[in-house]
Length: 171
Image (cartoon, rainbow, N blue to C red):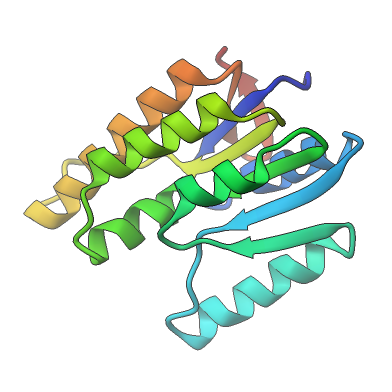
């Protein structure tokens, strides 16, 4: 894997994409900043968040940004920092639950990424490979995330699709 300004890891749940993204970030010199979009709505998620923090170790600084990811990218993706966003899918679901304008938020995120002076690594779950959801809310989520993925992939210098811990470079 090469180090570019914007790298996007996309894959299924438990595919290994976060591990590969973390390894890419840790291979670089600079301050490591983890932009966390997850929220602990239950004990399982709280435990998962704690495990992830422990796995990252002391070199990382975590910034919780479940909704205002564009502002966090704007503040943190500066020269000297390596920013890892994990994950866009959780951010999208947070926006949906908050009844936010996903299109406007995506536009703001793309602008923040485009203005960044430091490297950004983004992680997201591919949600469009399965059957068409049977309800309007799930279809809206799938569509919002699919559009976001296309825009991020177009902007990114490097895009990896991850399955079974293996990365296929798409771009």
